[in-house]
Length: 462
Image 1 (tube, rainbow, N blue to C red):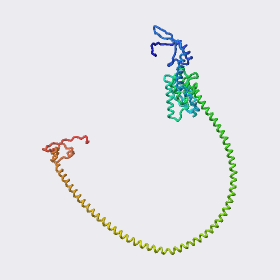
Image 2 (tube, rainbow, N blue to C red):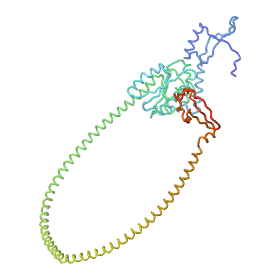
Image 3 (cartoon, rainbow, N blue to C red):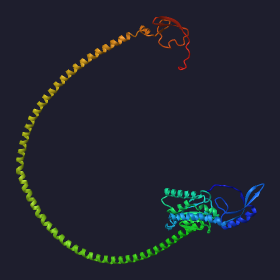
Image 4 (tube, rainbow, N blue to C red):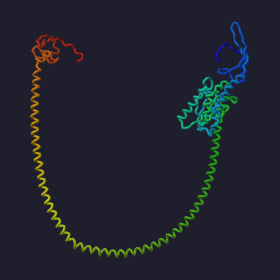
């Protein structure tokens, strides 16, 4: 049930380690370390000075290989049940590579081999590589790879109009148990569900992980991944060169056919143009002769017509002149009579209008006189009322001034200060600087004499 019921130290002595560890590493390709399961043979030893312990003298390599393979088999079967294991493989293989996202451990030797070729492609503008770095071994390595993958893809989608043609997951070789950290279900599922083809280059030729099984395309090493990308690019370039050569040949052939067609058309057009030009010249000569003849007839006919029209105009003008000489004196007499009648009518209307204007002016003058008299009366009444009101206000003010004399002031609790001559002192500056000056204080019930002392400095005034 997972409950510890006993513990004991176990050790491999140096002479035993030199024998059993190399054999275990050669058989499994793994190194003894955290996260690896071992089946060991141990001999119980009890010493009075050190107590009970176990001495290991053999390790079962088949057990460790079986545990690693069992873990991979469990992940593989689960992905098969969910129908995901071949999902990334089913994606179309990239026809060409323009942008590639690379996931690798930072500073690893395998990454250096990959970048040696990738930088050459990028320098010539053939393919751009975006790098995201993560740990590839140790606790949490698979989760970090998954996180860096999704984060890098999200940044690319936010900042660029393109998506990568492929995702390359690479790392150099290592022990089997170092690569075993990549046998993770969540990471493998993320690769299966990715809508971009994944290329793997993990370890060496003999190494295999779950990621290699679910990826779109597997390569043995990081160097072979970049070699595969470069091989595809070169193939597309060669295909483009071949297509360009075919297009060039077809273009030359088409140009030659077009040249021959144009030449034949030009010859036909030239001969037709010459034929039409000769016909046009002959037709022009015929038209010219006909026009000259028609023009001669038209000019002669026009001359005859003009002569007849001039004769008609002269006769018509003579008739109108005679009629005008008879009608003009009569019209002048009618105009004079109408003018005299209009003048008499205008004089009568002017006289009537002048009388109306005089009557209206007299009426307006009378109304103005009445309004002026009424206004004068109102102004006189208002002035008298204002004078009376001012007189009453003045009398009330005089009564108030008279009631404000010294006696009234003393009765309200005030005092009067007088100098030696009996004059009222009304300012604090009147006796400034005079020491031992006699003054008189007058109250409502009597007077008292006293002496004005030296004035102390006033800080506010200073």
